[in-house]
Image 1 (tube, rainbow, N blue to C red):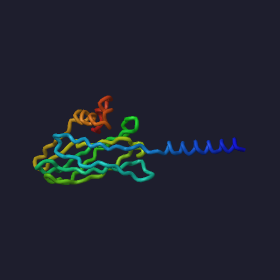
Image 2 (image 1 turned 180 degrees about the vertical axis):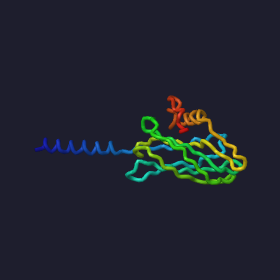
Image 3 (image 1 turned 135 degrees about the vertical axis):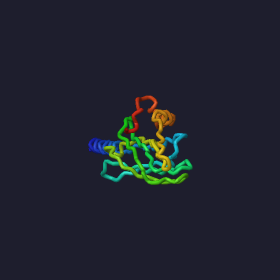
Amino acid sequence: MCIIMKHILLAAFIVVCFCFVTSAKLRQVYVIVNMENAPVEILEFRQCHAEKTDHICSQVKYKNRTNKDIEALAITMTYFDAFNDKLNGVRGISTGLLKAQGEDAGHWSICVGEPSLVKTAMAFVSAVRFLKNGEVWKTDVGEVVQAAGNTPELNFLLKTEMLEIEKK
């Protein structure tokens, strides 16, 4: 009787441990890559997702660093899994007027399959269009990868062929 009880307790313990291990969530990290020469600075980047959905919602707060009004801007967000493989990416575009030195925020949703698989996410300003003369500023993706690779969470970018992080 004691041996049977020990086996039952051991089996219950294994099941409990298995459930704990398989249901543990990844510690997610969201990294902002602000380039020094970018006309817009990302102030905040965070994620949210609704239960039972394959989409993740990106929330980005940003500020115009210039003395010029901006009529459009693009923010690229890229998501990686626990193995540093790209899950998906989105180029969120805002066409609302962003006054000189003004702040605003945007929300974008993208399908990543299973939001709980996202381990690391990064965001950077990829393009800006100024209102007055239509001048367009674009980031150098190679410089973004280099800058991102200097952060501990994204140093894998320097070790792989990850230059295609922005959708064209």
